[in-house]
Each structure stands twice: as C-alpha cells, then as structure tokens.
Image: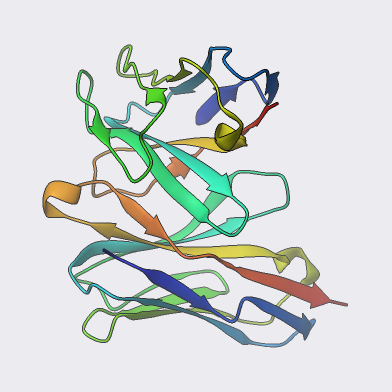
Length: 112
Length: 114
C-alpha cells in the first residue's frame, strides 16, 4: 500500500506562474485535506473535501483552487503564485471527517 | 477560534527516561485529538487517535490521555530511545460545521541522546 502520495517533491516557481500539486490516496478514503506548514505558524488547513464532489475552505484558502477529481485524487492549484505561498504543502486523507488522518510526504514549494 | 499549545517547545533527555509531552486547547468542543510525529524533512506519522468519548489510548511504549473538560492531553513515552527523536505534534478535531478540520499545536522537538 502506497498510502498518500504527492508529486512533485520539490518545485521552484516564479511569481505569477501557475502549477498544480498532485495528491492521491489508495486507502478508499472519503475525506481529503490540504495543509501548509510554515516556520512559526505550524500546520494550517487550506481546503478539505469531505467526499467526492465537495470542497470547503479551511483557515488559509486564498490563492488556491482544489479540484476533487475523483475519490482517489485531490489536487491543489495555484493560479498565480506569490512569494507568500512559499511553504511545505501536505496532503492528508481519512476514512471520514471524524477519522484518523494519514499524511503524504509533502511538496516543498519556493516562489521567487 | 481553537488554539492549541504544546509545552515544552523542546526537550532533551538521556536514553531510557520516561517523559511527558503536554498539549492544551482552548475550546473543549472537540470530537477527537490526534498525536503525530514528524522527522526532519518528512511528512507526519500518526501515533495515536483519541475520540472525545475516550480517556486514553495506548500503542507500545506510547500512552496518550485526554481530559476534555480541562482542555488537556498528555503523551507519555516510556523508556525513551534515540529513535524517538523527532517533533511531536498534537492536533484537535472539531465537529459540527468544522467537520474534519484539525487545528495543530506548534510541536515539541524531542531529542533523546545515547
């Protein structure tokens, strides 16, 4: 079992560029999440999807779009990257919203 | 707004010691609490999940307790080993309209030296 996988592992973007962070899980989980981790700020929820076809905002949603493509995949899209989006991004999944969350290995994004 | 605080921020102990990490939260209306460990440059590994109706959970040398009314949880690590060195994160989950959302503490950096 791969669990939660994320691609790419590292990415450097210039301000204004767009990109999509990919996340997939093979545990047949309904709920998926995107977090960002910044020094001094800890982990903060960006968006989550309770089930396929639904998404909801977390604490820091501005500047991101989150297509829930199907039950397995939950992408994070940056339409116009800004230096403030430099961070480590983690995807997670759980069977239900009340269940244990399992995390992917993260994507380290730098925006110059 | 839920706030989660972890004390101490860092802890250094010799191998073999028993130790306690503390987590406190401001809003007791939680549905669960989860402890994670994070190794440098890696993702989070779930250690223990305590539902709001439970008082404690155990896994091997780890024991986590929850006192919802006082807004506290502790993670007890018995007979610490150098391999336990990592950052330990506490996260509380809210119910209702916040279904599925975890709020994290800043973490405790643990170093266990031989």
